[in-house]
Image (cartoon, rainbow, N blue to C red; front, side, top):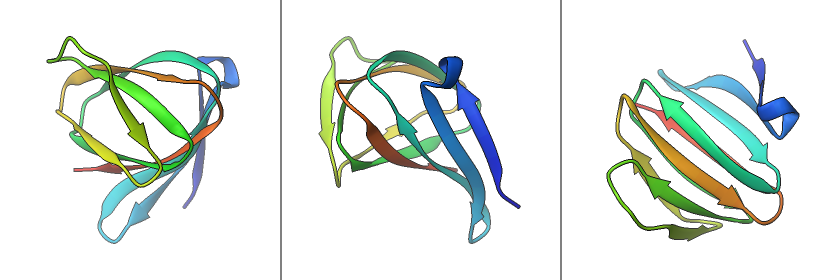
Length: 93
């Protein structure tokens, strides 16, 4: 079953689904900076566009482009900022 999720007053939208046996979501983030919290570990793949990310355990922004990915630890948060519409795939571990 597909579920549509909306965050930050509609600035981020995603569709959640099951990929094999693991939950996943695919979505789009619009221009801005956002703070996401996650209970599960996840791998975030940038599909289109680009993003800068600051993970909870780092003090620096790291750039990611289409084709790149980053990992987020369980029970943590991360900041993400995009300069234009950016598509992503998030795989939950």
